[in-house]
Length: 178
Picture 1 (tube, one colour):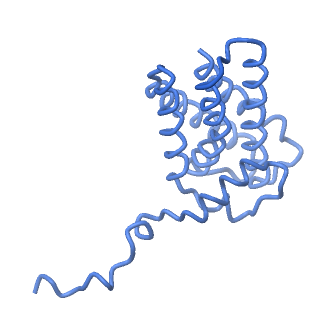
Picture 2: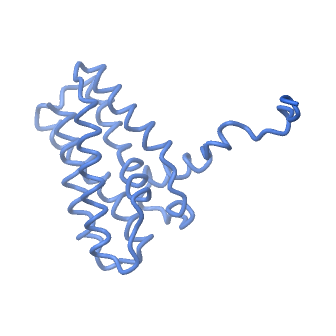
């Protein structure tokens, strides 16, 4: 009949959706410590749960500071991911998938989330705020370019990859400041 399968035989919902919290933690730690050697398995799995969490958290923190920028976050993110997808496929011999680009750029948004949390306490519209924003932007772009270069075997081109990443995260820093 209708109820021939039991609930015990079903896989857990998060496993069925492909959400692995251990992998999300590993990717997050690799972004937080970009000097550490990253596991190649991190780039192989293109989960979008972590980037979605970080984008929502970034928008929520900006909302707490009185800025309703959800549309800007997703619009700039979509354009930035599309642009990086084109640039990376033109620069690399093997190419890269769109899911990988979205995953890396989304995970590397974490320092901007931390900057936006800091902006709740201190105004970023001074010299100290600009310096903090530049540090967060450099952190994001270095982490993203390191992950892209490591995965695509473009070791001599890290600065070329970091430049468009810095432009993208610079827009997010401007959203945080203003």
